Length: 180
Image 1 (cartoon, rainbow, N blue to C red):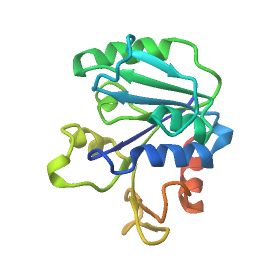
Image 2: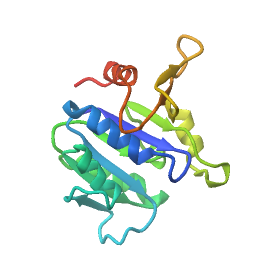
Image 3: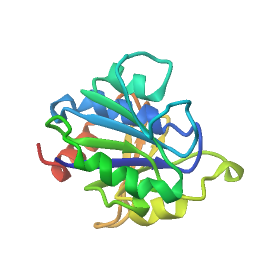
Image 4: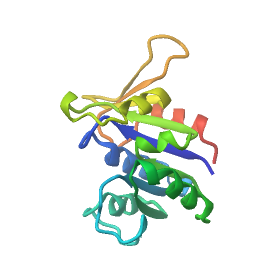
């Protein structure tokens, strides 16, 4: 089971849209998707499984995109490590995990980490510095699909015209790094 983390600098930069785009573009990975939030979402347990696809919540959007299972994990900074350990010990269906979170990177190293570029300086998450240290590639909305990498060995910057349609070069790059 391989893991991907998608993070970003703030709210509304497109993290959920990118997660959904990856799930839809790579159905053979049989995704289990997890949103990690430090905010109370009105759930009684720290880990809640979403069972209804739709557009009302990020976890419902994951199911709509094709995730096999979808979870919301609500935990503060102190509780996140324990909640994550418990979650990873529980059996999940065969397939890969995709997390939407920056803070997870303080407790866990994924096989692949993607940073969504964008957002305002004033709305930047405190966990952004951790994300930037772990990032394997950056993804940014643009007028057209293209890949920027100035020097061989540099981390790529994928420009996408839409997070709902992942470009063939980005899909090939991910498939090289995440085995089925």
